[in-house]
Image 1: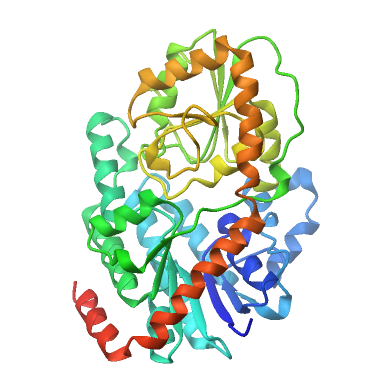
Image 2: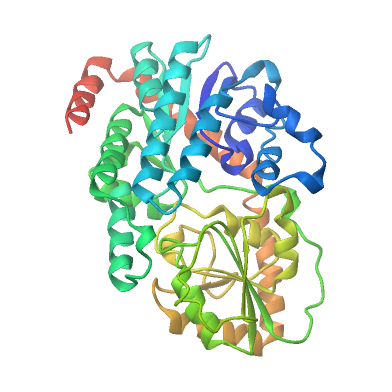
Length: 428
């Protein structure tokens, strides 16, 4: 295939799946990212003895873009280091975190434009961190694609604010209006510059359409996971049901509903919550011995968490298509989740899809799996089969097929027309 694509990505999203896939299909021209453990000075952290490695260093060591030739990759570690330091200083101030994310996206974007597009015919970036390369690529006649890896920001913001009204003690989970508007404005501008908006779920696609985005440019491409999450079939032990949640703790992830479910299932289930964040002390009072908060776990060590569990629970109020659910399916864990996670779980077959904010439905599902280990084993078998449809090879085929749709509009749509719509987005 003659198509060559520039990919720009902040962070290690899905273990660099997009550039790895494009390289495997002979389509990667160059990959730009902020910081990883294989380029520049960050590669030296691997020589630090493990016993002296703090969690942040272990996470950095896990950033290894395997399957991407070094000559096709450029890292900007100063962007990643600055972003990490600002995020640490922001701590419980969401508005500061959002400004740091926007600034990091802009810095990476400006460096990508400065380094150029070489022999590429297309550009692929991620939402709210690629506006400048999208504009520069279009000006050079390249086709453009942006991945909308989460629902439209206006929907995310509204749902989180509704959660804030329900749980006022979670004050750290609310952003200021100024940064929220900047998020939404940058997002809309990127929609206007993209020939293709890659959505991981129909939930995301509809959110773009419902908030003024060009639905005709949207295509649904579910994700996939690699074989590391395939845990051998094992006999379920007696005793309390083991319930695992993986993801940052907070209102968007439905953490209050996990905690309430744990409170109601005391003595019947053990809960483990893996991820960054803090829970108000009043919310988790009296849950000692019922809920274990591990804090963040490096990606290289996450498989052991799935091996511990009987059931996976993620009652998010808003996602894109949560990759941890794909991982849980591959590990053979029945999943309890919501429609708003954008998951590929089939209700009653691979687990249960319950309404958002419905603790009763969560608890009912947990009771059913605890009381019927045969049903649990059947769903576990279904999960493994379902995961085979969403491996990395399948994801790669779906993604490359979708990018084929980006080339036709880019070739046939006059750039003047598209840029007229961009000017409207810039003025917002």
